[in-house]
Image 1 (cartoon, one colour):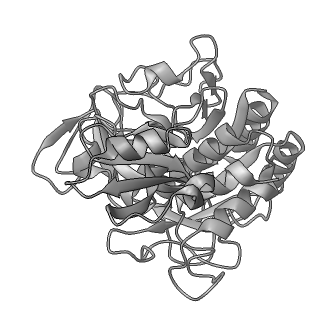
Image 2: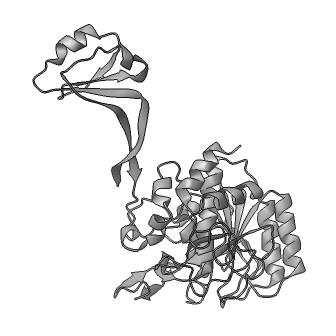
Image 3: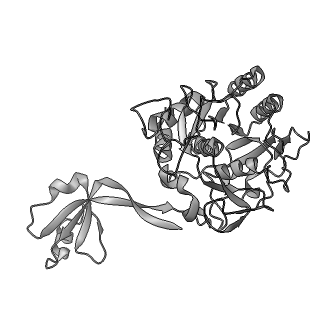
Amino acid sequence: MIFLILSQIIQDEFIIRFKDNFSKERFVKKYKSIIKKEIYGLSAVVIKAKDINKIEKNSNIAYIQNAVNYRITFIPNDSFFRKYQWNAYVTYLDKAWDITKGSQTIGIAIIDQGVDYQHPDLFAQFDPLNKGYDFIDNDNDPLPNKNITTEIHGTHVAGIISATMNNFIGVAGVGNFRLYSYRACDTIGNCSDYNVSSAIIMASKNPNVKVLNLSLGSTVGSNTIKEAIDTAIKYNKILVVAAGNDGGLVNYPAAYDSVIAVGAWDTTSQKASFSSWGKELDIMAPGVWIISTINSNLQATNSCGMNEILKGYACLTGTSMATPFISGVVGLILSINPNLNFIQVRDILCSTAEDVNLPGFDEKTGCGLVNVYKAIKKAQQYQ
């Protein structure tokens, strides 16, 4: 679906509107060489700004105004978008889509439980020949155990990042990206540091992967994971990590300084009460009642606060849901300017975020709530 919205004033063009009882033909004849266009159905013409002083004073001119440029704006037709996806509006994601909707040249690795790449809203985002790797079962198929309701987390994260947009079903992800699933967490959500580290390093060696999403954490650090993150940085990857859900200090690995640490924003326009905080926190994103994909054979009842059954979709809450939103935003930034590094991307996110607490950085909300449109605009100009 598309709508027209005001985009910008056209600085070098003016519309001259004549009074209705004035015949513009005489004016057109006299100034034919500088008239760019006659406006159909109106007694009006368009001229360039550089020629405005060539027009003699004329009492028959009703008004002169700058021309205004309108553009089509994109609203996806995915069935749950308008009803549930509040996160797109509060972050100006819908406006950013007028500039970019992402690119499948940008690969995003999901280090999590397995992802249901067979889901109708996800299958188009996966490479048929390389879907990732399963470190739980030690094979090349990162599909989760689809019949277990506790193994939906990875699929939910994947949908937030890149559920297929504008396909008349389900939800719209942040952008159109190539997804890779690295199953490092078991069916009940345990993610050993050795599996997570292995997944980070394998994903980092995938030349198509630009962003790594880690919606996981612990209050205890790990030298193994820190070393894996350092390896990822050497490969010029950008890691986006959940700050944590215990309401205390930022968890690991989000507490490491070479990652983007993400907190959760809630539906009442404030930091979610559970969202961990501290000096390591970078950015906030919506993380409460977030609708996304779950295993396609499962259904959720009343998960979004509505008395309805959703098959293959559910609303979940946590910094785990805020993190893939930022991973998707990083993907959009790289689709505009693919040579940016971690430091530059973090600067773009922070310098364009909406201040939502104390002026500037603060430990409760980091740099503030992500403004996707401003981030994309800055990425276009970033040197």
